[in-house]
Image (spheres, one colour):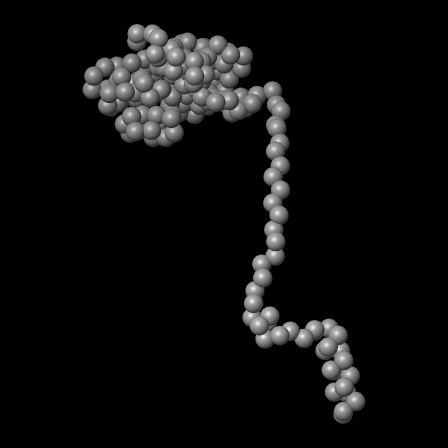
Length: 172
């Protein structure tokens, strides 16, 4: 029996080194290194920032799909929006064509498409609650989504910096 205990002590000592009482209860965290990588996606259609028309519509492009709404300037000029007539899904629209309307307590304003394409979705929430255009014109208050038929048309639109200069320079 003593022989077995001696052998167990050897194995225990080899596989489990002695640890002091202080080291037994201290926790050390391993050092972590982070590595950051960047990648650039190349595609025929890249996600672009918000682009604007001179009639105060905006569009963001994601692939071949554009999301359209009206600018903060336009919704402030309109006042409280009480009615939204948005284009029908599956309808084809040309750039600059009238495609809907917004009515407020002050005025009515037509909507014009910033690009040509096919309407693939309209924001039914805005039709039910038009005031979303006033409270969240860039996020929840978007108006419709369009599949671009002529992607090069976006080159004629203004970026945010150009649009802000347009607002400062032109009496609207």
